[in-house]
Length: 349
Image 1: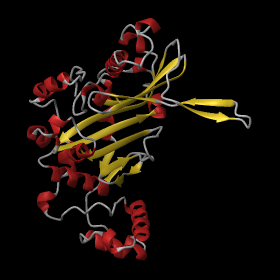
Image 2: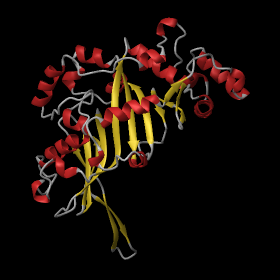
Image 3: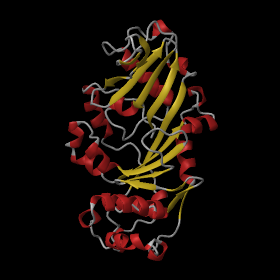
Image 4: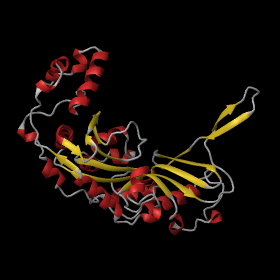
């Protein structure tokens, strides 16, 4: 499915849209430059979408459009054109957002969006394991043994593994991001009734989320910079192609002799299960964490995987697992979401 979109819709507008401005003044107080800020528009279930029309010739939209529309991003559509059009229709119906109708600016349907310029698209999928512990064990194993072609080792940050790392969300190429969906929904929560539903949480806790994030240069290189270049089958193709670029070596014990002597004690403490934050000063811990991560790809802030064979998840087995489809209880959940104002698009993956 596709959840995040950042795009610019070329359209002739009667006026600009902004959530405020930053002004640059000269010494006499005259305005030299007025920079428009993005307007944050909240959906029915708290997720926000940012919009801005810095000029009267284009409209900018950015955010997790799937979650903003549906209240979640556990499953959804593979069609970015349908996703964007549904977002525009919903924005049009919200008081005080668009000071004009879509039809009045020439947007009569999704077929009018072909010239939209995409600068970020997230193609996502989920694999389901037996338990959340298996999901976390896989991520740790992937951190230690995984490599992305032409991008190298992944970087682990607070339980999230990123291949093709870039600071924050500003990147121009591509990233593959893996995390435990069950942990993520505890931070970025689902609607209250879903968080209180044992069947939903049991399903989510077994899910390994894998996101393929395409930035501006990658979209351009693949001929996907314009929305007209997308078909519904492309999102899955992009995701599967990216997965084939991941390779994994056989997991094994790390050779301490490959580490500088000043880090060996810290690594040994971490490997033994100790919380290094409790044993080292704060500056030393973060310095060692940063350097060890650069040298080994291992984040000592994340506890090591237990050595019990029962907790080892073979990487080939996980990647060969059939990815998650729409759950059997989805109709029940979607009915409640629609009652709360959510927009439900046809399911793809």
